[in-house]
Image (cartoon, rainbow, N blue to C red; front, side, top):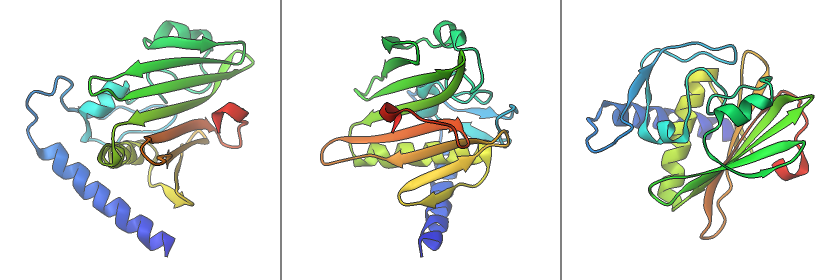
Length: 195
């Protein structure tokens, strides 16, 4: 039953994503661009639209998140990440990004042996519709990078060719709307604050 539901959701999401990608966008500063590059962690399908929301999140076709890949030197985070640093210790660095529509994201980069070992992103969104739109766009983006996802217990999971696991979960509760994204080595250890 869950498998059939997942297939239906993926088909609807793919249809919606393709329809949105075909519309002319006006007044959207980020616009759409077609991505056809490959990376060591996954490959993008040709003609995948990079929506304004995904561009605002800083996603790129050649990195796990905002120019950072798992396994990169942890020092690269400080030179690459342009968001505002809000916390840092010897195990992680946390950055926050605020968007024009009063939505925001907290990005936590964790390190082991001076290398990026996991990335956790909390997206704080305005409403249920924003959660659905963002979830569809991220789902299509991750599908293009890593192939079809597996959904179970409210969590959608992708696995890269390099063995990294990417999860996307709706963490909305009451009037607080949001998504959580985790990127980690398959079987990698996540800290308690990264749950």
